[in-house]
Image 1 (cartoon, rainbow, N blue to C red):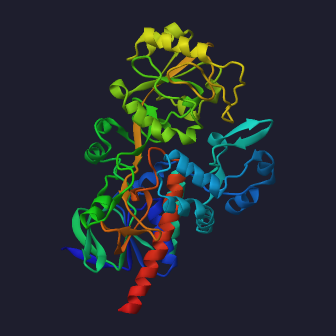
Image 2: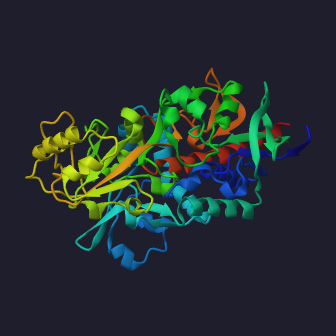
Image 3: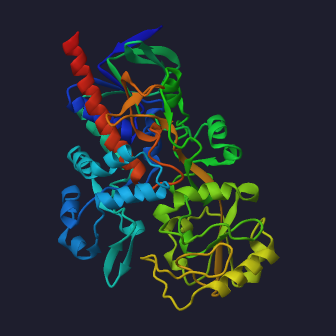
Amino acid sequence: MSSHYETDIVVVGAGNAAMCAAIAARENGANVMVLEKSPEAEKGGNSTYTHGSIRFAYNGVEDLKQIMPELTQEELDMSDFGSYTEEDFFEDMCKLTDYRTDPELASILTGKSFETMKWLRNHKVRFVPIYGRQAFKIDGKFKFWGGMIVESVGGGHGLIDSLHQEAKDLGVTVLYDAMATELIHDDEGVHGVIFKHKGKTTEVHAKSVIIASGGFHANTEMRTRYLGPKWDLARPRGSRFNTGEGIQMALNIGAMPHGNWSGAHAVGGDRYAESLGEGFQKLSYPFGIIVNGDGKRFVDEGEDFRNYTYAKLGRLILEQPNQFAWQIFDSKVTHLLRDEYKLRTVTKVKANTLEELASKLEGVDPEKFLQTVKEYNEAVRQDVPFNPNIKDGRKTEGLAINKSNWANPLDEGPFEAYAVTCGITFTFGGLKINSQTEVQDLISQSIPGLYAAGELVGGLFYFNYPGGSGLMAGSVFGKIAGENAAQYVKRNLINQ
């Protein structure tokens, strides 16, 4: 071995969950070293690639003022923030996962979300309302919908920079180009990490280890092994460094796998985009229809607000012939399309008539497409008013797959269509933890000194997830992991 380090706690990863763990451990008196696989310029894992939108429970505007004391009276007057209680959040977690979410973990996530937001705020992370994407203006007021109302200032980059700055100010050491490969362990528990630092095998000896290095969405082999055939064809979004070693290291010492190993957060996004960042997603589909190469609709586009459906849409697109689809809109709704539809690089076609549009949809059967649109247009309940802010109940009747809300006939040109494919954001399967974030072994006992947080924790999300709950879970469980790892270190010092 060329060299080794000593510290109290090692954190593997440097995204939101990892840095929350590092900060919490440090403020509880432990010396902390963070191992980040990426170079410094690409630090932060998937967190960096998010909008920074974060979902938490709040009872009303007084709660929000604690998270955003900067809110002006003018902003308060022009906004209807409503409320989103712990019960609402818990119910969303249950409903969206077909009631498979681990009730204990979901209850910690929802119950500790608000206090964790206050803690982040105290550690200099700043939040602002998401006026652009989560609110429509009605009668001069911004009305927020879908339970998600704030994002970090500067998006994901801003969140990660704030957490890293705070960790640095508190005296946390971060090593970059440091890829963890193996846990140092024996019957007494975990005692450190073997890692490659700039290509050299190195050890760090520690009293406790927190793994928070994300899932395996960027690992083609693991995607195909666990998610199944065709997932090698999904376009990986987010960090190219999330290749699953954190999970693998723990499984190698007998950790219990848990959760939805064949599931992932997978969105519909631009078919040919070079970059799969936020501009890749195409999330205004509830206001139009989606067709596959056979010219057929295959999903209820208006099942719910997009916050609650977008993370499962990618899987459905992957199952279509040649793994693509087209989103179709007419001129009645194009003003509602999100900014990502206006990018120069989008794969789109425009036409004044449906016949002209049909001839431009690459890979789509034009006759069948026109037949689909005709049947869809005739099935729309025109007597129900269209309202993008609520589930308006404006639906179709009599189709094989009906649209439940926001159904408008496609009959006013010009028409626009956008080609989409499946982009995978993060995987749902991972390690089993208990309420103290201690990693469990195959006989459901805690592995002494090993904690986990973030995307590599299994059991929270199945099939789908409520937008913004991934970052919240990272912060909530990261904070708990840091606190408990620090307590574990103190107990062991006393017992020595």
